[in-house]
Length: 206
Image (spheres, rainbow, N blue to C red):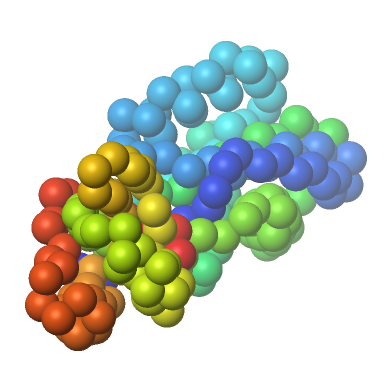
């Protein structure tokens, strides 16, 4: 399963074009319900703004939506969406709020202003490369623990839980496409006694 690129957390930016004030916000969103909920919050927060234009792209269903929110058609929402597309981001919402400053920007000026708003805010975002990962458990004797600990970093494995009892039980996460090679080395390391037992899967940053 292919990975995707998103952002780590909500960020904001601001710029002014001919006395119009543009407030930009980018946020990770898990689904359309989350995107619409945040849009509702922002429209309440900026109730006196002239326009709240936005775009978002969701992995699930390949959803891509945008709104000019009263600006001339094609001058606001689509430019924001194009910035998201160019950066190949998914599960991200960008909202650019405008407070009109009294000077008309024209269609070209609006496209540039909303493109800049989206670009500036995404420049502030921490970009995450999300990869499909498998979560699995390993149960091993203490005698093998040191060798296993030397092996795990080679495959980018992340320890989620550990239980040091009569034996050691570890819950680990690893990129799914690395698991076959890891399992082979695990078998060689333990003379065939250790096996990874998958218990789940998820997308995680790597």
